[in-house]
Image (cartoon, rainbow, N blue to C red; front, side, top):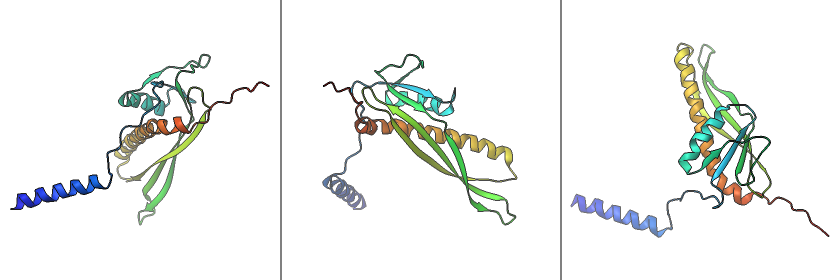
Length: 178
């Protein structure tokens, strides 16, 4: 009897969810002619550029190296501006030492699609970080790992936003002859 009730609840839940129009989100799609991304950075060997390069393969895109003298109009060009890491105090110990920070990783970049104008984008990745002055070495390693995860998340956000940015980017102005 109990199994029949569980089955009935599962079937009823499935019918309700499909009846309301719910469906899983598909992967974002880029225009068919875009399959390579050129990554440039204000800083040589920027950690975010390496993270973005690593994550492109997961989404079925490939990266190409860019010479500043020969930029291709066939690629999506992403130019990474220097990222910032800000800390805001959240709480302190009774002794007055900092107990918890909010880490704010600010990412700014310019993306340009073939035949379109460049679009400036900025977003933040936020995490809470608990500090313990008695475990300085462990906490510094934890902070490094957290920053690496924040960079990976920022790279994922950048790639997922490419499809909406491709449709929202204004077309490059063409010269009008009279």
